[in-house]
Length: 638
Image 1 (cartoon, rainbow, N blue to C red):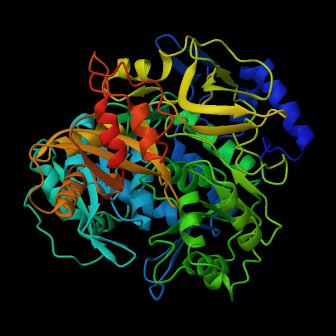
Image 2 (image 1 turned 180 degrees about the horizontal axis):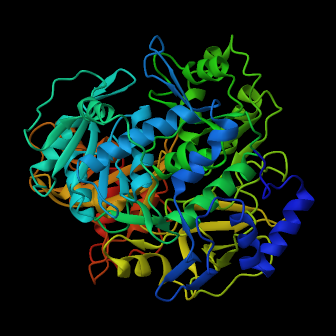
């Protein structure tokens, strides 16, 4: 398969970027023309950032699965589309060719239709990292249902919140999931969530771990039984539903600066074009390469760079059920050698964790198939970058340090492997089609290089967020109201003398923990639900493995006559129950009060500095309601 939009040299990059700025519509018209459309668009782009209202390829008709599956059958039908490595290294891996994957998607699309799912219905998917998760996602897209995948680590309460927001009447899950040494009882968690969600009509359950589950008559059905029903019908075809370019493809929930998760909506046409375009260019994908993205499909990275981007490009993509350190810290390297992986795309958190095991787990592994390494989720620190470059890439593999967000849909700023220069700790340059700017607090653009500011994007790109589900005003307020006529990323950024961009961290009340964004308000709300807690405040602090850890300051309702550590465990358990283990505080400090202004605003700046170990230069504290509380907090720092 050829890619007419592939950039092959630094000179090509400069030309493409200049064209994309001077004539964005002409540039994206050219890229989109490489895809399969049932009807060409009437206009490439209509937009304003005031409402916001962005439409790409208006009037265009397509189905994303025809681009990810059908169009590859002639040339690539027998090529592996999906390789699945199980959690257990002794287990049986699975290889699905494009023909296999197509057939299974058609089959399960008919299962969905048999169970009443129609175009526009929201379908919640809460599964382990198994091939059926990919099949379920694509089957939803096939019939025009809007999928909403929920990460398998979220709690019943978090699932209930998302189900209620999306009003999802249909759920696809597994009996259980395996992750390292842990067994996760997914169906039981769903059952707990559904106590609050009586509107759910059907739960389709895949047998995977053979965990005992409760099956409710009239609501719950087995995946395997539903497949047999389709087979007895002679495995009928399932023509792809014709979708408008701007029809919703999926909802993916992400934490915000308020407690309620935001349902980020991406649409069919622009998302398809941008994920495939960015995948091919950033990783410099060559037909036949094996691409291994280690993310979970419950996050945007899995959507864009395990499924839609690679499959849109006719690539071979890998799914891994387990974790990098089980049964030992050589698991990634076993997989790379076993399947001759060419592209490895992982998170700095994983790399830092593996660094802690030393070089022993790497010994005995060739890793000579690797051509490109990638980093995602947070800026990679220089030590981890060098370790990856020297020990995994053997000094010969370019590392792409990719910056993007759930809301952007695809990679926005990154070097292109072997094409544009890499610079440790820098995302480097924007992809052609992306127009980043730095602004000051008033929204004035900061010109030139060797400058810092807040990172915004001043022109839309095809996979930009369209809305937050059911609450368009929240989308406007969160991303488009801070600075006029710009998308605000929430990140601070430095631009060096050569024009390279380096992300310096969040400037809003959102933490980046192990590459996942967690809203401080969401964690505070969960802590405050613990019976003994009066008030809490959350800040981030530097963490050797996670990048950012969660530091909680908690006011408890009575002096601790008992065991403080037990109380900490109780609070942690509360957060795990309400959000999930991903949001557990790393440190909990009990305090008698919080530093507040006379208007009642918590001075997080002071709390952040104390958590980071900076106890001297805290600025003027004389205007606080109770300056003495700062001294107590400093003395009690954990």
